[in-house]
Image (cartoon, rainbow, N blue to C red):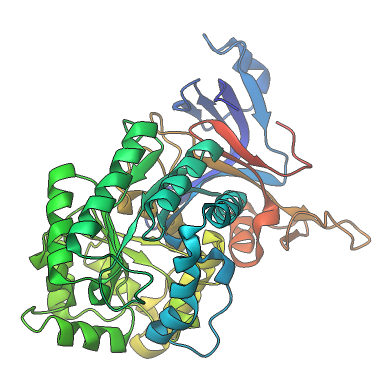
Length: 458
């Protein structure tokens, strides 16, 4: 379904800054046929006047119910689309053995396009159902399957960054690049495919994806750095997720000052680089990341599940480093950024037990990371993440459950239960802590309706 000129009427909420969550109970947001926000009214008392706004007489009216609100679409800055079948399967493993036991065998099977199609269709549909309007995907080394993921994202209408994974060592013989030249050649092929289906990268963007330093030779990293400089295409990788991994990088790259310097030395540490995890960064590394304006994807659920560690996000934010949230499926067990925001709050509280209360993240801050923070990570802060004139309408309608006098309520709207005395800030907090995908009843990307539950009708 294409975008339609529409006025979205009712309560809307979005983060204006890291600390400020704006909630407007009587709003009207006009979205044009290109899916761009044309006007935002914050004090609409008489809706009958909307139809007389010049040029909007025939606009569709999409109204939120009294227990619903509009919120910006979530931005997942780090997810492995190919690993979705393994979500929740990690046993007692930690990062490096988890890769060999669970991850490489699954990813290696994507030589089968029928399997890739089944999994990629599912993961895109599921992330959309959780309100994820933008996802930054790691695929596999396979060019046809990676291109298929880009095609599926475009067909389903999800804004996506799609990257072919590069690795020419420390992976099974059946699943690695033959040599550094192959890594660059096949990455270029995936970039050109995206150009063929979305020449201006309006919805789908290719992303250069060295898996992480241990699985890439220096020659491969340098080749990808040169490709990054040549094309201007963004990059994504992992960094300092696990102590054993950090030690391994030191062993494999003895001339580099640090893990971060490995990427910097190869021309990959730029303002268009997304670094996932960043749990064990030295003082010097944090300063270098800030200097290069590289971005961080915080993946708290995965870091807890794999016993990797607890990232000091407050410190990164205080330094002015850009941070967003990533599910890191399947190291992370859920495709929900709402769940990731919860985990970000909880991990920050565990950090606070050691570092003091200043480390704790607030409701406003984690919702900012899930939206505007993620938009900055992927370089789209002027287009998505909030409700401002000129931004794209990437949004979700969230419906909350109300409890009747007999204790029964709207049981198909997730776990959120409202008893009638909550103000809107309390409703949003309840949604953050107890909501799930059943609360997300409709999702739009660039004004196009891309997901709806059976009980929702626009």
